Amino acid sequence: MGQIKLKDLYQSCKEQMEAGNGEKSLILSDDNEGNGYHGMFFTLTVITPENVDGFVGLIGDNAEPNIHNIIVVG
Image (cartoon, helix red, strand yellow):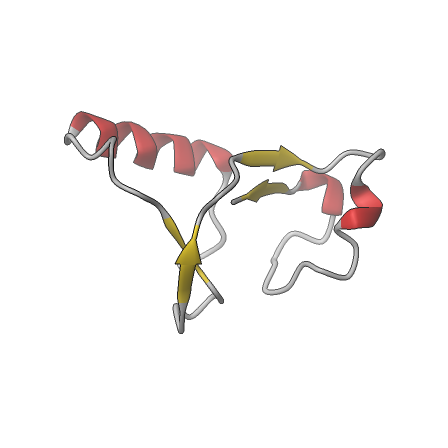
């Protein structure tokens, strides 16, 4: 599976809400192979010129080379 876009996440969320799963808790994969999981505690964060320094050097397993084209989930 390739790296998903925000529109893909939106569609998946919409489908799960319609299936009655809106009250279930979210976990995130620790890596791109699903070798571990952790709880999701934050929503979406857009990387901006004002906050970019807090993310440089912390992003791994990412196919998008432009840090300003990334939205942080969780």
